[in-house]
Length: 90
Image (spheres, rainbow, N blue to C red):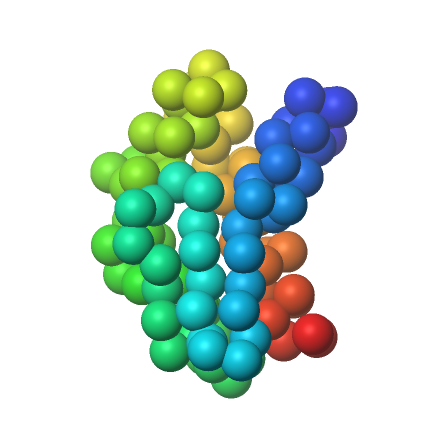
């Protein structure tokens, strides 16, 4: 992974706020928070976020960081894994 991709992933993770008490995730790329997440969910992301290339995530990464589809896919996989780990291993 190059430093730029690492920087983007770190930014996204840092800017994602998880309120464990209320069960809410605030994403930097989505206008509505996700509520009622559970560490037991296989994916804490709603379906409209998980369809990668038609998502606010993809648009945000392209507009903010100038990424192409392959880079968005890589960043998404790393970001998603990191957020799941944060939820599961809090």
